[in-house]
Amino acid sequence: MDRPEWVPHDAGHEFTTYIMSAADAQVGVQESPNMQLVKKKKLTTDDYVNGILERNMAVLSKAITLIESNSLAYISQAQDVLQGILPQTGRSIRVGISGPPGAGKSTTIESLGCYLCKQGLKVAVLAIDPSSTLTKGSILGDKTRMELLSREKNAYIRPSPSAGTLGGVARKTRETILACEAAGYDVILIETIGVGQSEITVRSMVDFFLLVLIPGSGDELQGIKKGVVEISDMIAINKADGDNIQFANLTKSAYQQAVGMLHHATPGWKTIVRTFSALQNKGIADIWTDINTFMDLTKQNGAFEERRNSQVLHWVKSMVEEELTSRFYNNAAIQEMRPKVVEDVLSGALTPTSAVELLLNTYYSKQ
Ligand code: GDP
Image: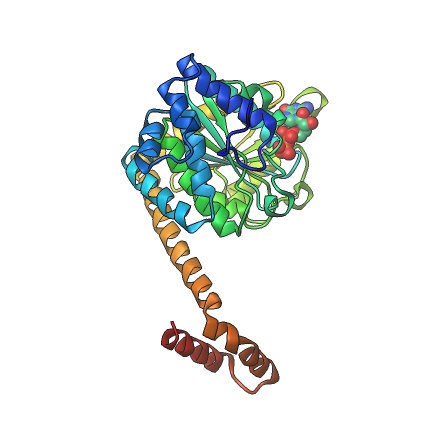
């Protein structure tokens, strides 16, 4: 099969095969209008909007590639597409899944994802992997990790966008969530690895935050940052199978005690601690029941709407800040004068406050 130009450059062969066969399967024949649309070199904004709303997976993939593009022309078209689908977004359950490497996040996503597909739900799996900027996609890049789920026709798996800052990656993921929602996905699972700021970033775009840990004691030993427990709505101790069951229960008790003393992440919701086995599909249904209870409760007590509202306003604010910072540092006059100002601050010839005033005055007079 030829590799179409819209396939992300770092995607494996499986991606193409899967997406193309999904597009074929949808219509049964090779040269259907759907396939012609997908093969079209350049889609119009209406092609994208209609394709997404018609739940055409190949168009959805192409739209996400557009969203992930850093070229100015594509960014502007992506915004037009998003504007067109906006009324059809917001209806999914957005779940963040974090935990240290090896805790079993992918196995959990596969197991939970397959369970949800069996319930007739459509599941999209996205990822935020800050390391992928350097390594070109270390998580979810390898699709064989979720082989069963990738074969489900109601599942869509997309690797982490790999270029740019965490802010840039977050913007792309937020917009990808909207595209998936407009394409009819009921549940969006967003995986992140327990490194740096990425958990906080994912928390800021999901309704429910699930922390997957392994039997063992102490946050540091688990390789998770202090504070991550506090932003979690559920702590799920994985690998509670075989000889591990007792150890997993001990870990559960320890975390139950710990969360009892912490501030809970969501108003009205007491952080749940449970054990489960992703590999043996034990406890997966219970996790899903808890997520639904959480959704009902937070929709009733207003926490859901309040969180979604504050997330979107925070998104706007952080993008304004990023854009202003980038314009400031890319300004020619600032680039020219900055080394001298830095030197003067370091030598004590200029106070930091005066340096800021000087730089900002220059920026506003030389835009
Ligand atoms: P991730 O790095 O957090 O995504 O972890 P993976 O899902 O790749 O799992 C890491 C390893 O743990 C793999 O070898 C899995 O087979 C294993 N694993 C995952 N879940 C379970 C489980 O429930 N029980 C056991 N015994 N092993 C598991």
